Image (cartoon, rainbow, N blue to C red; front, side):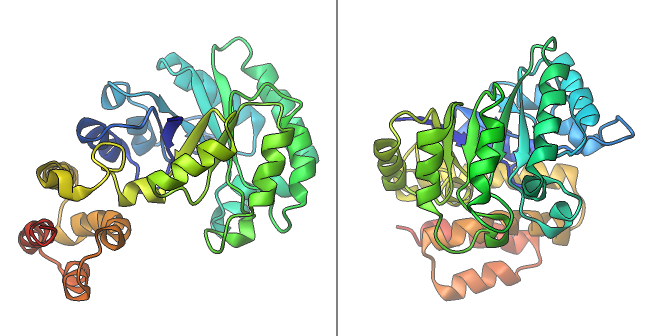
Length: 311
């Protein structure tokens, strides 16, 4: 099987989630942090520093992801993570959020390929002595997938460690089918190692993509693996319900230690259950109860009931 990467998801794949996932489940060879945002202050926020804290990422391969449109700030961040022992950074050119795109960041930067070219030229010059390689996670463009032809020309000019392609444009967000013909185009024309991303949710999807793109270096999964963290360990939650229960209980304990108030803690957990519930195929009544619960004590009871109902 190809290498599997866990995609960065803002607010979801935090250092807490990554650590606990890696403790209970196998199959992921590389984890990516939610994006860090280097800026003119040349300082990371406390929550960003926690994401790249070596102790919190012990025992796993973790790659800091950067969201930035200024080469000087990007190189500064590369120097900072290099000093913390990291050897790769990932450049976020895929985020479709309007608040990001309007700042010419994420997939918004793709609309300006000449500026992107100049950015890369400065970045690769700036990092050449830092011992840090730069990988890229990209969409096809902002408005039209044909933008990708020019964008890929830019990528091909630089020694990108790995190019992860999510075959949608910014305006697609995560809706509709992926634009497979453009993933084929990337596979055929990229001069850099390719990682496949987008709508890979089940082992059948992994097998199919591995067969279609045999020379791709890895597959990156996001929502699909959050929905089924057990996918590459047991394949089915029924095979090891106790591990699934322990996994969720430890997440609860970890968030209780860091956050206060049932409401805030449950909001964080419900982000995960938004993906996990459909995969578990629980009854509409149980799904409704979990979404409405506002007490941790009630949540613990519901977790036991959800797992018990999978007998």
